[in-house]
Length: 246
Image (cartoon, rainbow, N blue to C red; front, side, top):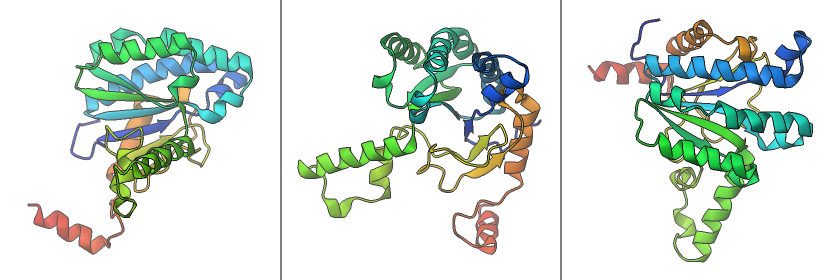
């Protein structure tokens, strides 16, 4: 695939299908999560090569805390062992985390923070892991922060607008996703970046995450490149704006 101006600046992915992939092979769900880590490495490297600037991966939702304790423990263990400096330093990738980190085991919190600190100066791409994250948690958190600032007189309630809310979200350091990919065949967004994907292009595929390849990524980006992003405008308006750019 050739790099071009149609490469999304920000790709968000719901990495679904690890458990079903493992079950079809007669393996425990943890086996699928382990295989999914290798896919993360490959897709991160390819996104960096293509010129994607932000890659956000839905790793563990707040609802996932309700899964069997052994599966949760296996996922937390994978977080510890998979955060290898090589993938970040080799590809010049900065690492960030969004989510309720206080719910994570202390050793996981420490590993996440040390990785963020160590990669802070990398600037080819930012890889963001959504861990112990959900949009309802995030928006509720933002509402509480804004309410507190209003009570303290730091902000006038009449001045609260979309930008105010965006600035109080945990994603305030990056642009909204251009493209959202969900693997595994499910057709829903599962409480993921609900505010941020208001105008994102959505791409669903049946491939389980452990089998998601660079070619699958290219197909998603090619589908994205054929779409016209109108943001509520008409097709003619967008085409006229594109013409006046040149």
